[in-house]
Image (cartoon, rainbow, N blue to C red; front, side, top):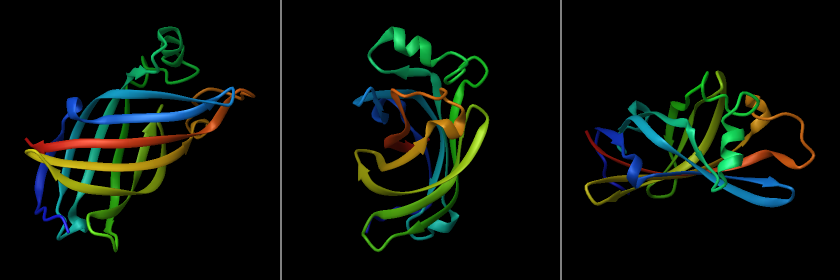
Length: 167
């Protein structure tokens, strides 16, 4: 098991990746968000006292197609002028039976709409910090991101690899 006593950590944007995958016309389209910031308090011996409070910059969306990125920043999708951040705040963390594995429940806030999600994550020491990895799925329409579409899937997968170190 990872030995990680109560430490206040900050996510490091440069060493982290927030990726998503969604089907568009039946083809997997990927993208990323950056501008990661926040606070993580994690204690593998007392996970109930641990928490995550992190954000990414909505305007940082990058799908490698500038025209699409500009469209996604507009009101009908992420409305980045009105809602500049996407956030996640944990409400409960529990240990899993597997070494270094945990389950987190928390609130994701996209466009001012808050939904509870639960997903597994792993933690491992790396360099002078820790890497937190996990995956979850969301329905974009739960957050009024885009409208009815025959070509764009409602569901997308999010993959997290968050590098955090002591402040």
